[in-house]
Amino acid sequence: MMRKILDFDSNVFMAPMAGITDKPLRRMVSRLGKGVIVSEMVAVNAIQRKNPKTYRIADVRDEPYPVVVQLVGGNPDLFGEAVQLVEELGAHSIDINMGCPVKKIVNNNSGSALMKDIKLAESIIKSAKGATRLPVSVKFRKGWDMNSVNAVEFAKMCEANGAAYITIHGRTRSAFYSGKADWDIIRAVKEGVSIPVIGNGDISSPQAAKKMIEETGVDGVMIGRASLGNPWIISQTHDYLTKGKEPDIIPIETIKSFMLKHIELLREYYGEDMGLAISRKFVCWYCKNLRDAKRFRETYMKISDYETALAAIDEYFDSFKETKQ
Image (cartoon, rainbow, N blue to C red; front, side, top):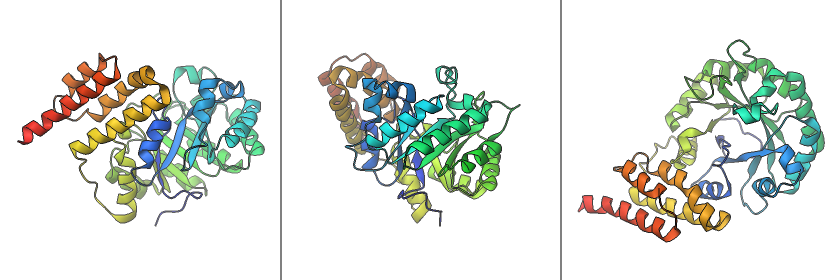
């Protein structure tokens, strides 16, 4: 029996991914079953300026499921203002990103750069906690690099400053997403604090999620890259961990219908041109393990109007029916 985390109905989290875990995808994943959904990163300096694009990303008021809104930044004062605004915009809770390795985030003294400045990180958590009634969590990494592995110390600091739970990715910033995630450091973090700990890194299947829980003792898991093109993995992992239900193979027809609905939501949310452009990466992910996927991806990437895109999808998936006959 896994430990309950806040009032979530699951201990399986879909990782926040910029340009990916937007409102259309969140809506689609919520229909598949249980799982905790986290927003894209929201920059505190941009939302404080009420930048229209960022403001829209943070606005989750019309979503009928809990959304953890993740904030990123390096200014404690702006965090205080941002959490108040995000609370008004419907956030279930706040997650502070102290693990993003991307250069433009790190250069802004944000994301995983905060692991090098524990005092600043502490100030940010205090500012956020002091400005909202919502639970505040923190996501971070093993450390900045192999010469500064400080995840346990960092976790204790988060706990001491009132974090409701923490998420630890088992790689350093310098490793980005390469190599193998260090589950030993995840276990050390879990053993070092009493608040719930979410493990992140190399969870490629429901079975891998169970293995991480058994090896590290974490209270929950977060799945990122393995969900690209396979959003079913979130609810499948929940069902596997709670009921022992082995994941089903997703039928071709289900992939097609899910993909078409996702594209429709992208069109509604972003408009036809931008929705089609954004759909390209998702279509490539949905089809990555299917027959003749490379040829179809090359075709789809060149399409510039919505009707042609739908016709190309029909033609591609019809080829699977012909094979069965």
